[in-house]
Image (cartoon, rainbow, N blue to C red; front, side, top):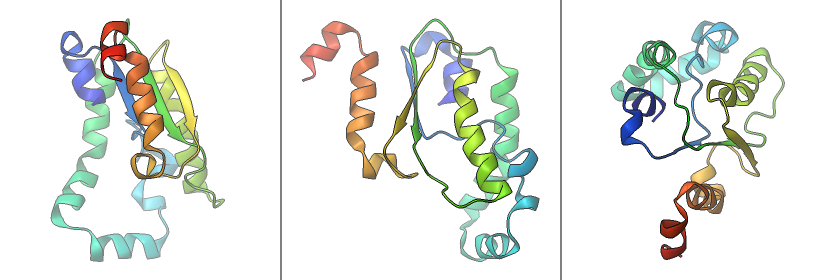
Length: 145
């Protein structure tokens, strides 16, 4: 969504990011080389080929996103899980900091901390509905209720 909004801003009326991946999610302390060994092994064993390909593409996609002009002059809502990673580790701290930082990439964006874990669509779908209604033009917002 971030890439599409930046690449085709005239096609997008607003952007609602739901616990979205930061474009630099797997950089720095978030790099897979910093993941616990057990997690790297488990991921290698249980992840599908598609999941592995997606993981391998995250940095390329992130660089592409950051290389495009930012999405501005239209509403941006960033829904972030209030406590997705409660454990204390370098990796968890990095992920939580990137969760806070993503709003900085969209000047004028509003970040909403949702009482949820990483599964906002399942755990608190009303937060998403409310955010979408909040960015709809008034006539669409009222007629959809």
